[in-house]
Image 1 (cartoon, rainbow, N blue to C red):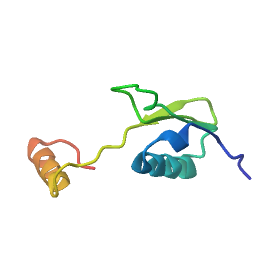
Image 2 (image 1 turned 120 degrees about the horizontal axis):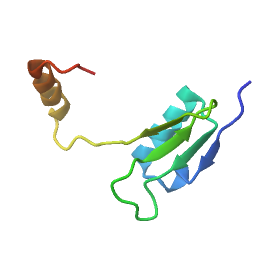
Image 3 (image 1 turned 120 degrees about the vertical axis):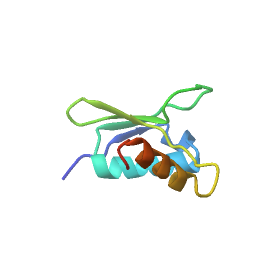
Length: 85
C-alpha cells in the first residue's frame, strides 16, 4: 500500500487546477503535491509534485479560449511536422 501524499495548499487552486492536481496525484503517486500558483505569484506553474524518488514534476493547466482551438493547434502542428499529442 502506498502512503498518502502530503497535499500543500491544493484547496487554494481553482477548480480545474485542483482537479488536474488530484488526477496527477492519483496517477503518479508523489510524496508531495504543492500548489504553486497562489499568493499572487504570476508566470509560474500551477503545482509542483515531489515524486517518491525525489524527482520534481510540475504542470500548468491551460484553458483553450475558443472551441476548435485544439483542432486548429493539432492541424498546424501536423503541417509543420511537429509531434502530435
